Image (tube, rainbow, N blue to C red; front, side):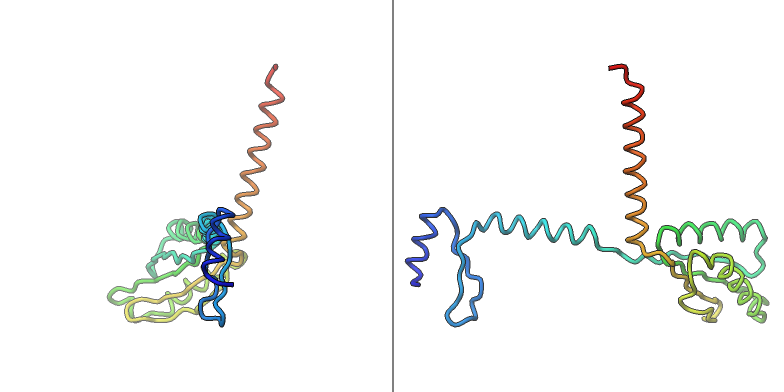
Length: 171
């Protein structure tokens, strides 16, 4: 079809003539509402971004001579991060004479890995890196699954409060 005829058809139908495949022989064009097409494409892109999951690595720093209560607090942070679906980088910092006893740090990291075994797994084993020893823990539940579970729980709580409001409302 000639370009002039196609333009006339588009004007009569109050649509736009959009070139779909310019490299094809002959080039392919389509009659469409271009504004609506751009809007729908933007909405698809927004939905894809909403469902996209960003991997976050949280870091916890420890010392080899950590007290039991402090260890429990740090372990609680690691548990919270793993439940949220984030990876956790555990760093043990050695100072002075502590550097001659890396097995203390290794044992501490092994203990932490065993304590949070049901929530996460060891992605990279403990490695000595200069004055630090580093281990990475990954969550067993994917971040997308955690988000969906939170959304479901929020919806259930909302419906429960709505039902409670309806039951107590005298109208």
